[in-house]
Amino acid sequence: MSTTPNGVHALVRRSHEERVLRVLRQHGAQSRNEIAARVGLSRTTVSEITGDLLGRGVIRVVDTDAVARVGSGRPAERLALDPASGQYMGVDFGHRRVNVLVADAAHDIIASGTSRYEESAQWPERLDAGLALIERLSTDTGVHYGALQAIGVGVPGWGDRSRADGVAEVFAERFHAAVIVDNNVRFAGLAEALHAQSDSVRDLIYLRLSDGVGGGLVVGGQLARGSKGYAGELGHVTAVPGGDQCRCGKRGCVETVASVPAILGRCRRLGVPMDSLDELKAAVDIAHPVVDEVLREAGTAVGRMLGTAAMTLNPSEIVLGGDIVEIAPALIRQVRSTVTYELSWLTDAAPVIRPALLSDESGALGAIAALFHESPLLAGYEANVTTDGGRQWP
Ligand SMILES: [Zn+2]
Image (cartoon, rainbow, N blue to C red; front, side, top):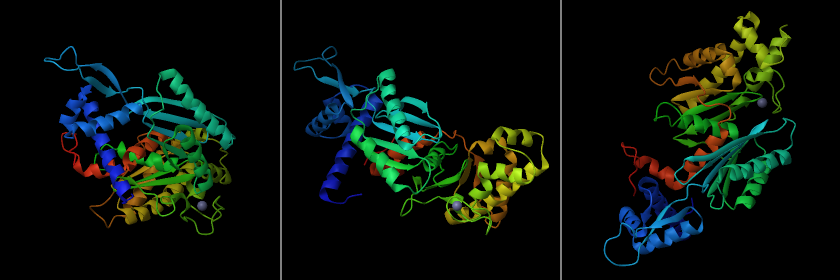
């Protein structure tokens, strides 16, 4: 966060703006005088802020107070949030589809959609599909993007900064909004932390077992990125020294034991023909002993790694995502018992280990949540949340 005078000024202004939006969110249409009285700002400051919000299409004039007005003077305009004004956008590019969510100033989702593409589709094609979907949502729902404040974009994979920068550039140029791009598994982890049953989940490890094994860390209620953006790459912790070749270049990573292709491949090598999750499910349903053994091996490797990660982070929850977690409960059982063993000496600090509550398509939700969370102001306000659900403003 900038500490220059300009930075502080911008921050104060943003804080005022948030307060005005909050009043309109809570109390509906208001005149400028009513807003000024409710937020405790001068009429001049409120006029300046509402002028800017009107200009950006965040709010609109709905009527005047002429009807209810007693006494003389010019009727005052009443202002309200524009319900069709998209303020935040979350986009999640998966291997086979892109999801888009649009939220208004009140953080409510006002439009959402999915568009599919072939797994072989290259980036330009995927981007085009995403942008076409965004246009289609506007046509179908009337939502407009002229006032977008920020866009969060989730992309699969890890470490490709130039792709991330390219994606950010495309969205920033198109929508003139701030853009953050991150790994979609990491965004899904944040979405899980926000949707946990307990409000107190501020420290969470998310691991997705899919075509690869990816992770996301939520620390103190914030997504942890690390110094270069690699925090949470738990799939590439070595599980079997000298084991199978991993796509990262090393051998024996957790991913070579616990990703879906690794599990299917191990079953085949042990003489059980298997090419898909459906076939795996069928084998699990009849309690095939070889398949059960392969799943337990994978669960042990994942559990050891998560035990170590849990000793580093002391999370309250560990969440496992990916289709295989639903298909193969033996896997999650083995993870649970291994982590429990690893942490057995920490009698009062054992994390809850659970399957993901949200689907694998939760990246867009996490991306949009990251935007709300990453605003330095919103993050700072977390400590001021009152018990009645409202917030105390500084
Ligand atoms: Zn690896």
